[in-house]
Length: 216
Image (tube, rainbow, N blue to C red; front, top):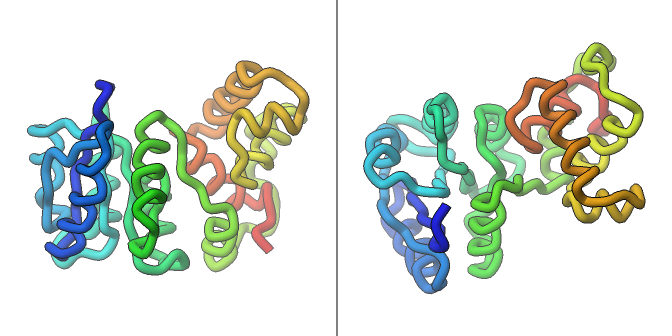
């Protein structure tokens, strides 16, 4: 990734796109490289502009953000995807996260929160809101057991997964467990591999949906 983080805006409301562009382009390390009014336009624009981050509205008339996210996630080198929503308890958000989005952002977020969110996902981290994820997972239920029991997580890896679900960063997990950050990175990598998921967001969703962590 270059020093400047490039962003593709995807929203069917021109005023929303204009507002996001103004906020993002005001930052020296961020730049909007393209815009789309529907998910159907995303694939060709990503191929052309190769953005680092896609800000993706979840509700659009033709191809919604869930399907667009799913299609982008199948690419060999997909961009980071940050879904944008009006309501944090929206089922669309949960489905977009399951489809491969790296986090979500509320449309009413303050400008500084928006730019920080873009930077967070651009550097490879997931943007998790533990309470919201827990609420969404609870509404979708679990199988009542622990479907991850066969994943072979060690006791320490299981502990790291629980702390990930609580929204802690690698540095915060390291402080909590009194170990080095590199050690935590190794544990996180092992958790992702054993669960067969791409990133922290997917791992946390798997933890809730499997019953490994109770959302209630």
